[in-house]
Every structure is written in C-alpha cells, then in structure tokens.
Length: 477
Image (cartoon, rainbow, N blue to C red; front, side, top):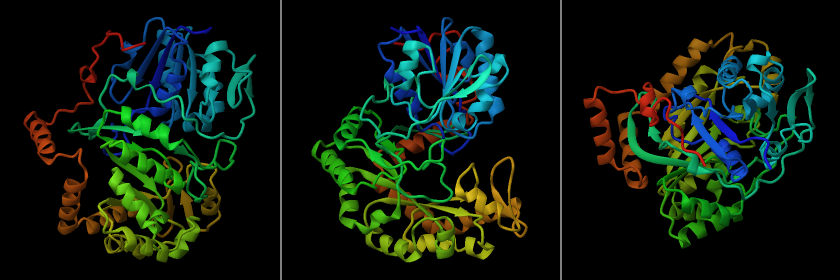
C-alpha cells in the first residue's frame, strides 16, 4: 500500500561549482527512488543542471516531491523552489534530505506555509523514505523534522548503520548523459558515472564536515561487499566511473578483493578515486589497483608543513607523504593532490612552496582550496579563538589581518601558475593520453572543434537542450 501515486525527485543544484559539474548523477536521489520501485505508479527525476524549464516537467498529478539538498545552495533559493512547486500543485507534499537540508531543517519546516518543507530526513535513507511513502506519517520514523499542530518536532537520530549492498541507484530514471561537460558548454564526449562503495571515515580531520552526522557523532567506516560493487560496475555503461567514497582504500582486504574481481571478470573501465596518501605505503596493492583500472587518484594532502598538518588534525607528517610517493610515483597512475591554503599560522611564503613540493613528489596535477569553516566542526572554534583570524559570513572562508580574501585569491592563482609550467602541462597531457582509456584525444579534439565552429554554444542555457521539450512528459516507471 502507498499513500502516494506520483513522486517527483528533484535535484535543485544548478552546477556552479567544479569546472566539470555535469559529470555525476544524483546518486542519493536514485537510491531513494530505487527504494520505492513498484510501490508507486509513477516516479520522475528532474535535474536542474539539465532541466532548465523544470516547472513544465513536473507531472500534473504529482502528490509528493523529494528534494536532495547537498551543496551550498542558499536556503532562500531552496524555499523558492518549494514555493513554485506549491503554486503549481497546491496539495503536493514536499520532503527533503541531504546535508544542507539537515543543517537548516528547522528553517525549512517552519517556513511560511506557501514555501514550507513538510519533512526533512537527516542522514542516509536506509529504507525510511519507503516507510514514509507507505504511511504518509513521519512521527514513527527516526531522524526526521516536521511540524505537528504548528509546533516544531524532531525524532531521535540513531547512529548510522553500515552501508547496505542494496538497493542500487535506479539509473533507468535518467534522461540525460552525464559526462565531462564544462560550465561553458564544451562537451568532451566522455560519458561518466559514479558509484558509492563505502561511507564514513575513521579519521578526524579538523576541516571535514563529512565525518560526522547531524548530531556531531563520528561516522565509522563501512563498506559494501566487493561482490556487490563489481556487479554494479559491470552494469554501468559509462567507461569512466568515479567512486564517491571519502576513503575508498581504508579496508585494504576489501580493496584487494575488489581488484581481484575486476581483473577476473575483465571489467575494462577506468576509475577515479579519492583516498589518503597512506595507501602509498602498500605499493603492491597500488600496482594491483593500476591493473584493475584505478588510474585517476586524488590524495588529500592539504599541506607539506608538519605544524599545519597538526593544526588540520591530518594524522600525517611530511616525511610520510614523501616516503609514500617515492614508492608509487613511477606506477601508471595520474596523481592529483588537494591542498588547503589560509590555515592558522600559515605564511604567504609557505603557501607559495606548494608548486615546488608538488612537482618534487611526483604529482601530475593539483587542486588548491581555500580553508573554509562550514559548520560545527572543531576547526570553526579554533579559528574563532585565534586573534587576527576571521571567517567570512557569506562563504565561510578564513582570512586574517595579514592576508585578506583578495590576497588569498591572488596567492591561489599564483600557485596554479607556478605549478603549470609548459613542461608540467605536457607531461600531464601525455600521461592522460597513455592512462585514461576513455579520453580519446582525436575525439576530444573533434568535439572541441565542432563547438568552436558552432560559436561556442552554451548547452546549459537553452531549455530545449535538456532533451525534453516544454510540456513533454518525462520518462517514468
């Protein structure tokens, strides 16, 4: 039995973050949608990154809308989406989940009636959404916020359990091809997908907001079985798949089993992962990962200075980083290092040491991030208590009396300029050509030339480019 007949799943992030921000599908929504497969008559998925004319795509008889609020979208914009939904479908129930919804759950459920979210789910779904669809009542669920007779209510949030093997994301609801498509509209012709094989992390980095739940409890690492991960990868069509895990290599035995199965079943895809540099201490495992298709590896290094690593609670030392890379830098992988600048006690000169250090240890590319305080993580308290340091109210970026936000932007640009010498760029391009099988340079060149000759059209500014004309019904099941 179900209290609802038609559910519209909405991903309202318009993709203004990363340079390639249309690479990854809304996996969370697809998992939630999979959990009610067969329970309701109609399920529709709308992705604002593609569906510019999204209001015309909402089914006329929708009675439940589920929003996934993951990134730093202002609450006002989210409430505006809800208001527009209610103007179209006055009786629609609206629920929301994701980290932004968790952080602003009181504001969302106590907003004026015309833009109010009825229920906010905190933490992973793990079957709660299906139970809500069956009953229509949030009171019996754990970890939800709602109004009861005009009074704000929250139910107790239980600690996260282990990540289940099922359900898998319902990829049948997609109507768009996710791929390496730049913000300016250049489609490189490389299809991509994503997979979540684990969640949680055993480490307690001071800046991380993903290692705790909404109650501040640490999220222990848990992984899906290697068999279930390989089965899902076998069914994915895209040749390039990114693991969304925070630390995919933490369970070494699981990683070895995963590689063995990928090699045994000859699943010839290329994978991107993010992990800690500690994996470099196991060169035999890294070599097996190369053979299995793990070629695009990002490390959260953050800094090369011990006092800054201690401030960030990275549980790393510079010598560990250098030793790890000395053991794996010659393996056929494309190595990317994440660095954070603007730390308490970090000088301008220390920030500008990043390019030389990155090339010295063998990084092929770098990403430089501004230190941010996003919420109740220990970092916020440490920064606030340090004389001369401040947190920008709008962005959460940290700056000091000595180094302003404008100074930080210029330092960040200089770090990138200093790293990307002509020689570094050529070496990185050649490595991509040799290692990244989905990246065919002739195909990429053809896509770029076609885009240039067409006048650099913006594929994201035209509603018709979404693949669905206004008024056309979406793919449902």
